[in-house]
Image (cartoon, rainbow, N blue to C red; front, side, top):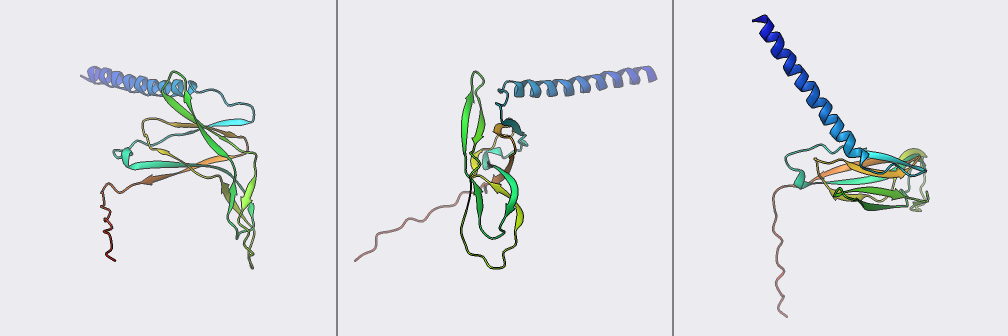
Length: 166
């Protein structure tokens, strides 16, 4: 009886290990399909967690870097995102390019204290798909961050504006 339990446990353990290894290798092969980063770029991945209500979610991606600002004005990074299809796969990837130009509002601020902030680009809003990672290429020296937005599943009605009588 003990031999049978040990055998069953061993088979179960080996199948879990092989399933785990297979899942890792499929994911790795999937990322290998993407091109390597060009000189001066780095490849980033956002592993999107799957949920039952992916359809009600969006992701907004930002690229930026932490730097000292005046602590008063809104500071932003100029640049643009480009969505490129991955030939033969039906997937896409994002590329962010920038010349590194930083802009800011120009308020005259009394009592402003310099502080370190993550200065970001404009966001790139995209559909949420928990079954697929988002691959992006950004310049070296920058970081990528993202926000997940979730919509209320309820619908609300707009009100019709009726013509006013003169």
